[in-house]
Image (cartoon, rainbow, N blue to C red; front, top):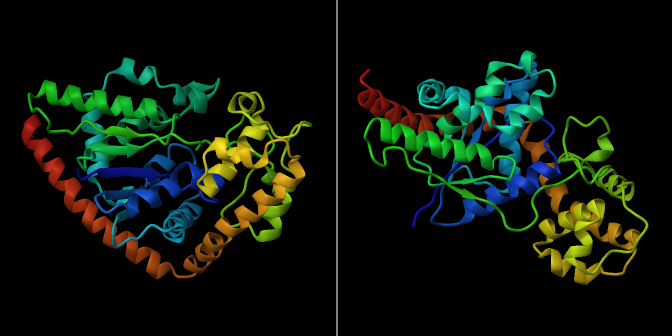
Length: 333
């Protein structure tokens, strides 16, 4: 069976290890599977749900594309484009917002988390962007969407919207009902300073994250200073679950090495953190530095990055505009 896979990354700039292990590394693996047909979107429309510097946003879009390619995504095998270039996304989002129900959006926990206590001052875009996300996915007849646990609720909303549209207009299977692709192994990367907080570029301390553009010395220093506890590394998953910082570092090692958590624990059980951190630093440098160097190289070639986006836009626009044309016919425009 051919899987049609859609996924997007916000051009937030300064992508870090959490972005790589939580999403981009998986994209590369999906891209390399022969039967998959992958579309990777730089979701710049989603990015403007919060305030952006226009010049920086343009740079961040290119940096995201550079990161895709540096990580191993082949633009000849997959479509890579930025969302704002394909007007069908915005139009479909409006049409689908007339299908989506207010109660469905009120249940979205991510809005509550992102808006915080002062949600009255949050943008309408931040509230309604799950409908745009649904449009992104449904325009390409996507069969599968790689998601983390924090996005699973949004994909469920997408499925609800697709089913309601199909039922309302009696067009069985017009919108495909996409399935989630959730990695079974560890993929949620937490802060190096707090094992209970997700790794994020918004955290004040740069020591909390490994940036994909960090050099060898910076990576080694950040791992050396990463928060741990006083005990040796545990021998079982049950013990690991009670120790968030240890779980995070072992999870990073497992994700980079391709080992299961159990196998990683077998390798380091009973050892102290200083020994483990040396091994983790070496592995990070081995895996991340080639990506870092390639990103920096690609960012010096704007014409090449822009040509990838232009080529991807043409391919994506052809698919998405044809879908919107059919939507017009169905709803009576």
